[in-house]
Image 1 (cartoon, one colour):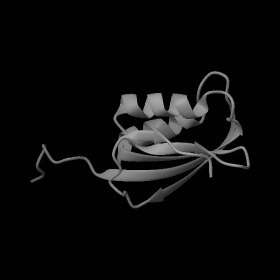
Image 2 (cartoon, rainbow, N blue to C red):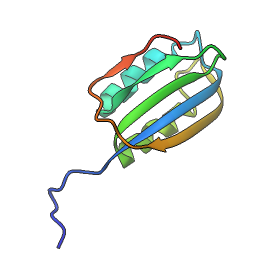
Image 3 (cartoon, rainbow, N blue to C red):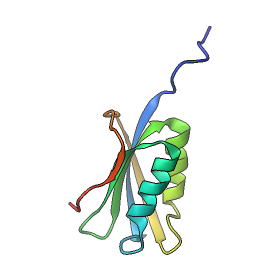
Image 4 (tube, rainbow, N blue to C red):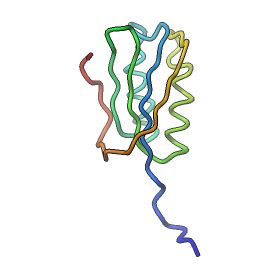
Length: 100
């Protein structure tokens, strides 16, 4: 018999977003959206004009955030979203990291 009060399994998605995603508020919209959803992780710009992000949380919430990445904020034009699933690190909070 399963315990209905068990905590949801935490997963980690490492996401790379390409397209017109820098200079359009993508990172800050990501912070706002992820924070509202209760996810932990980080987001940053990459030198090749992609955005990189890590989301940790319950599977359904992380999946919702990854779906959001396919459109991003209104000014973004997303061409591709690549997702790698990794072992969670137990991150706290959600932040913008310095560009790599």
